[in-house]
Length: 81
Image 1 (tube, helix red, strand yellow):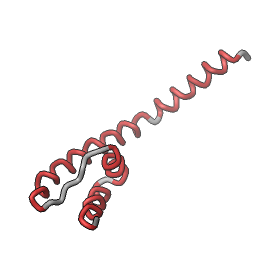
Image 2 (tube, helix red, strand yellow):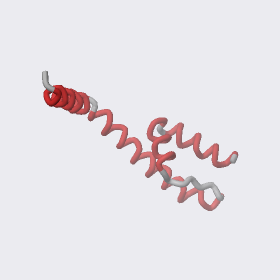
Image 3 (cartoon, rainbow, N blue to C red):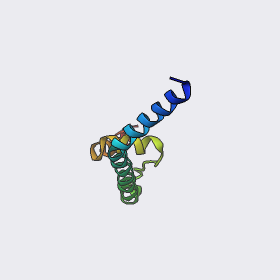
Image 4 (cartoon, helix red, strand yellow):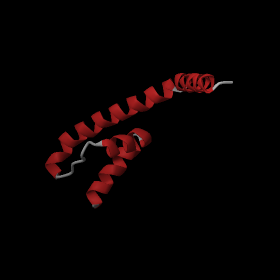
């Protein structure tokens, strides 16, 4: 087997795995977007109390993975720190 055939087989397997897991990737991206919207709305209401979360990569990933409890945890950390 030549090295080109091996590369094509590995790329094919990679695309196959990505195709099978594309629903979970899309769900994760959807969770990140929803959590960013929730943080934005919460920032509007809580800004008058000087409680504000920056929207960045860390807050997006953290709240995307953990969901609503993650957002609550981030606000509790913001209050404590």
